[in-house]
Image 1 (spheres, helix red, strand yellow):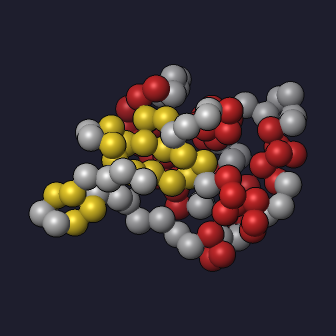
Image 2 (image 1 turned 120 degrees about the horizontal axis):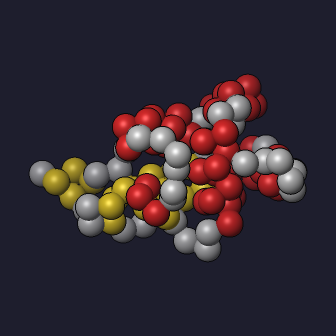
Length: 112
């Protein structure tokens, strides 16, 4: 994972250990349609996406909040590439803790 450094510290926001995340936290994070849209975009993307490449029907500050909620729920990993904050679904880790959940949710036609 490529990250930049500032003052000797990596610019990577903190991420929770997926083993400490409850199913309730995940479902609460996914109740919002904007967050479901973000997860859906990341699920179908072959690589990480920057925040700005996901078209959202909310302001930039509200989008930042939604990305934060998803990160805290263990669904996404964020890191910087240059000045862009990149987002990737923690698919493998998530599948290990909640087998089949993401696939089942993505299979729903009314998901996003």
